[in-house]
Length: 369
Ligand code: FES
Image (cartoon, rainbow, N blue to C red; front, side):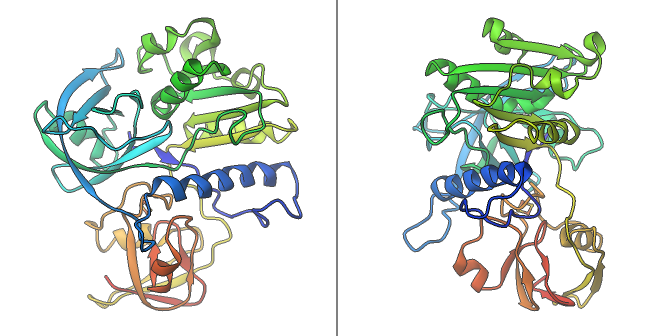
């Protein structure tokens, strides 16, 4: 499954600590501030300010079934010549170019200390966009692939090193374990006080169960078939005012947690979820595709990407949340309402936008498509 990151669709009014509003706004500020800070670090800006989009050729060196229902596999990549790979930190992801040309983001779930291998894990989604099926069916050992990254839109901020929290609580839902696992490993290795709740439909469906349970009593595994659907209290057991919460899983789970922590003063929330956020404060407008002349209506609750895909189904996209840059397009005219946090000022000045999140501030955008 492609793991995608939760980005506040509507940026809080004051990102820099002035005029702070209610609890919800402060939670969103924490997420946005962390993302902005780390995006600057991990997108590896070139000296001229452009993002370094180097493509790295790798080869599949190992595949393993990671869930008893066989629907999750992990795939290990190394460089063909065995050289060291670019460093990464927990929460980072790769842009993986699949043999078909599809590009998908997958969280790195291996050990950041291993400089010679990247590991991802992917759940088979039969009715998804095809990326997960391709990983399951076409990435045999020995298959060459190309990646970009690693980049980090879900950074792990250690207590005492950018976080005022004293301890960390992790919540993972199913394949949402992938970015969380390296965080757990780092917290454990550094002696950080931490706990974790890992949830899923059944023990057969959740990946890396043995690896997670090897951490012992700090981990609580809850499955729907044995314990019923978890409540916010189940997910946040033990969370107090000194805690930062890292959460990755289905939309409903991340939303339950976001709603619950509004009532706990002092909690820092960092979350990542599996699907695009809903459009907030959208208005309807038109998009003209300059090369073909089509004019498309974009309703107030739809994204440009969703509507363009109806007439250009081969258009490249991946995260659908404005951080992977795959859907970047140049606008030829019209007022852009930028809603991403990754394009540089130069890129924006050149008319570029990410059509999975950004919109039109007027009546019509003309895109170079
Ligand atoms: S699809 Fe990732 S930024 Fe648009």
